[in-house]
Length: 154
Picture 1 (cartoon, one colour):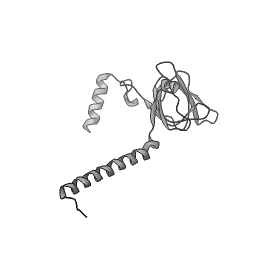
Picture 2 (cartoon, helix red, strand yellow):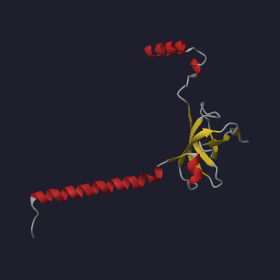
Picture 3 (cartoon, rainbow, N blue to C red):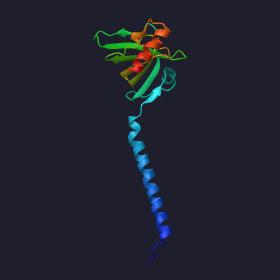
Picture 4 (cartoon, one colour):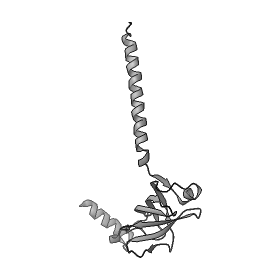
C-alpha cells in the first residue's frame, strides 16, 4: 500500500474541505427557500400570479376610495394598484399603521387566498421624502429647522 506524499495529502484535504463547504451552502439555501418572501407589484401578479398560500410581499399604491372596514370592525379591505393600471384586492385584520391612507404607498406581507384576494398579515405604509412629524406640521421651514437643532442638542 502506498501512501500519498504530504503535498498530495494537503491537496486532498483542501478539495474535501471545499466540497463540504459547498454542500453546507447548498443545504442552507435549500432550507431557507421556504422562508423567502418574494416582492410582487400588481403588474407581476397579473402576468404571473403566485400560487395560493405562498408567502409574498405585495407593493403598490392604495387606490382612492377603496379602503372600507368590514362588518367585524377589525378587518379592512382595500385595493392596491400599480403603474400599469393593474389592481389587487387586499384584506387585512389588525391595527393599521398611522401613515396608511388612500393614495399612499403600501407593502403588504401575506399570501393569496383561494378566492384571489391577497390576505395581508402585516402592512408597511410608505411616505414620501416630504414627511413631517405631526408635532411639526404647520410650522415654517425655519421653525422646523430650529426645533430639530434643539432636539439634537439635548
